[in-house]
Structure formats: C-alpha cells, structure tokens
Amino acid sequence: MMERHSDDLTLLLHAALDGELDAAGTVDVEGRLAADPALAAEYDRLVALRDAIRTRLPRERAPDALRARVIAMGRTPAEVKLTTPRRSRRFVERYGSLAASLMLGVALGAGAYALVARPSADDDVQRAIVAGFIRGRLSGQTVDIATSDRHTVKPWFSGKIADATTVVDLKTDGFPLVGGRVDVVGRMPVGTLIYQRREHQIALTEMLTSSAEGSNVPRRETRDGYSILEWTEGGRLYAAVSDLPPAELDAFGAAFRRAAAAEREDTPKP
Amino acid sequence: MTTDAARRRFNEMVLPHLDDAYGLARWLTGNRTDAEDVVQDACMRALTSLETAVVERPRAWVLTIVRNTTFSWLATNRPKAVMLTGDPQLLDAVAATRDSAPDPEEALIAAADEAALESAIQALPHIFREVIVMRDINGMSYREIAAAIGAPQGTVMSRLARARAQLVEKLGSRA
Image (tube, rainbow over all chains, first blue to last red; front, side, top):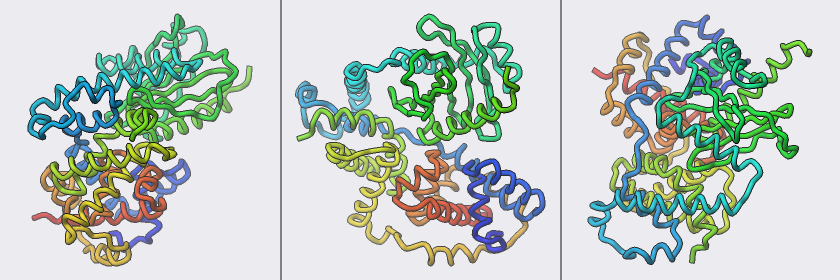
C-alpha cells in the first residue's frame, strides 16, 4: 500500500486520478500501473473512492433563504428601500424562495445593465453562443448529431456550413466528444461541438472572424454564471461556453488548442 | 457605505459561487445552520473587500474567505474541534496504514453509502477535509485549490493523498 511506494509515486498516482498530468506523465503512470499489480490495485481503490464520493455526495445547493439574504447584499440602497429592511428569520424562511426569485430578477437586471454599460464588439456573438448553450441544456437536446467519433462529425458539418471546422478528440484529456450541432450567430450558421465533463457540457463554437482585435491568448469571461473562453487562431474565432468551473474550462481550452495544433501539423499544407 | 461598483462585482463574482461556498462551509462546520451563518458572514466580508480587492480567480477567492471565516468561527465556537496541526504529525498517523488484500477493500469502498462517506469525510481533520471537498465534490483543479487555501500545489497534492489514504483505510475496512 501507500508506504511501499515513494512519496513522489504516490503523488503521481493522485495527479493521474485527478487528470492533472500532461500526456508524458500519463504515459508514465500507465506504464507503471501495467507493470505493478499492487500499484494498480491501489489506483483502483482510489478510483472507487473518487467515484463513490462523486456519485453519492452531490454538490449541495445553498438554501433559498440564504440565497435571498446574499442577493439582498448585492442590491443598491434604492432597491433595498422597496422592502422592509429587517425580517425575522421565520419570515425569510417562509417567503425566502419567493423573495429569492424576485431578487434574482433584480440581480439579473443589474447584470444586464452592466453588460449594456460595457459595449464590446463581439457582444452579440457571445450572447448568441450563451443562449445556444442554455437552450440546449434546457431542452436536453444539445446535439444534432450524437457521436463520439470526430470522423463522423466533420463530414456532417461540411454539408451544412461553408468552411471546414476543427474537430479534435479530447477523450484522453478527460473531455469526451458527445456530438455536434449547428448554431446561428447573426445570420451565419456556425459549427458547435459538444464535449462532456462529468455531468457538465462544453459547447465549442468556431467561426470566421473579420475583427483584427482578436487575440490568440485565451480570454475568459463570465456571463449569467456561465464561463466563456475565447481565442482566435488563423483568422477564426473559437468560443467555449460551459457551466464548468472556470479552471476546468481553461484546461479544456488548453487541451483543444494543443490537439488542434497537432492536427494542423499532421495535415499537409495545400 | 458600499459603492455600486462593489455591489456589481459582488453580483458577478460571489453569487455564482454561492453553492460551492455553502457546500464547503457545510462540510467544514458539519451542519447546515452554522454553514448558513458562516456563509452570510463571509459574503459580508467579500462585499466589503470588493471595494478594493483585485480578484483573478473569483471562485478560489470566495472560498478563501469562506474557509477563513469558518476557521475563525470554529475557533470561537468550537475551539476543541479545530485541528490545524501541521502536516508531519498527520503523516505519521497515515503511515500506519496496514496491508491487506486489495480486492475486498476496493469493493467495500465502491459500496460505501452516503452515510458512510459522510461520516468518513467528517472524521478527517479540517485541512484534509477541505481539499477533498474542493477537489472531489466541487471539481476544482489543483491550481484553484492552491489559490483558495493559500498553499503551494505540492501541499494540495500531499494533503489530498493523505486525506484519500485515510478514507480508503476507513471505508475499506468496514465490518
């Protein structure tokens, strides 16, 4: 068990379990696991533990009463005056969820104001992409074509959108491909890929960009509680949106760009 | 007096992470009522510091405030429950893990129900419990956890390894 391995190997095993290793590290661990049954058994126990925690101890939602109180903190004094400033806990408990939904409306209104107040060239694009993501999640219909095979998605796209779309397999990075769909941004049909991470999904949209201001350094923003990661590459804009924690979306972006770069190198230049 | 700018930043940076904040406080305090008080207090602190604070990773930042608030709350209200010992002593305790056949252990762990998992995690020292909650329940990366607990990634990794060793030990040896 633990004490039989060096501390370094133990840490390596946990990093592998947590998907924190790069490709070289992963290959290294896979080799050691294949060669050492005791190590493999230890790894299996860790997997069993992680899966048990993930499936049986879900993230908890903050109670509505607490949410209502915290939302109230973010309101302006003018908004606060609309309601009685002090309520008994009992009152909040009884009407908390109603208050929460009302106040959420106020908060969203404030959020929308913040967005209007800070105009950005690709604002409409972002809005369309996030709306597509939310719509997909609500309807449960996130893909038009469901497949984990990138060689199926690519030709499917080519019949529907004008230019070729980058489709990469990120299964080994922990983001299996689920499928693809066509979104509409402005009046242009654009290709969107859907990747999975645990119970979360990531929608990656690719489109031509005319704007010169795009940066190939990824930029992350938050909109309505969703994270958006954007970067440009060869005159094309990539935007990934997800309800994943931002750090994991960053990891997704890095994995996608790495895989896309590798694919470009493999493809002979025309 | 809170400015509009601070409130707007609060709505953008703190509200989206309220569930994670509450979850962490719930795990660290061990009960829901205390967690609500702690989170409310933490949110007030967050709002105040948003007047000036530069925040790069909102979730890690929010959770830092929540954990610090929790620890001071625990120190005041349940001084005996807080274990903030350094790692070395704890490492010794973990190293006493016994050897046994792997398969039944794995099966036992896989079969652990919610109550068994809950009590095993609650039995962990706070500094181990928080990394397990952040990683396996909140799905945070090592980097994000390191930012949240204000420690190097190496510390995050070794605490995670030790926390999991204790859980494996406890859950894998249930009668």
